[in-house]
Length: 209
Image (cartoon, one colour):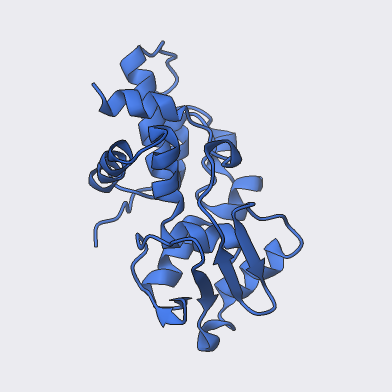
């Protein structure tokens, strides 16, 4: 299965913002972005004014990296979104938000999407009582996502639940940490995804060229 195995902190530096790819480490003093808040490479210190194409490209790359999606898959999401009725921007965000690894992270069962992806791949996650080990699986409204009973004691899940108890979760989800389960209630609206620091319209324009 294709995946990005490069240094995560370099991705944040390249986009010029924290993408919080390492969870709590990104909030600590050890975060490399705080020490080197410039693009990697020998010319990283240089400030360049981006063209319209450059701004569109950076928006697309940032969103891809936040959700941990490679270019081929992300383009497929855009093509699906463009074919659907309604706002293409909202459809695109909905495509990536419905990924199982993202939903597990949003529910608070993993500290970041990378850990969430591993939990799914290793068979710790159930959807409507059945094991699903495909991170890109598209969750539907009404689906119940739960932690397999034999997996509830593993450290990454315990740490995430302890960290996220008491925190508000996304309004399109419901979580029950005591039962190790959550519900994908409905699809999110664009304005509800407040932690997405990209111009989604620029991404639509990038693929519409």
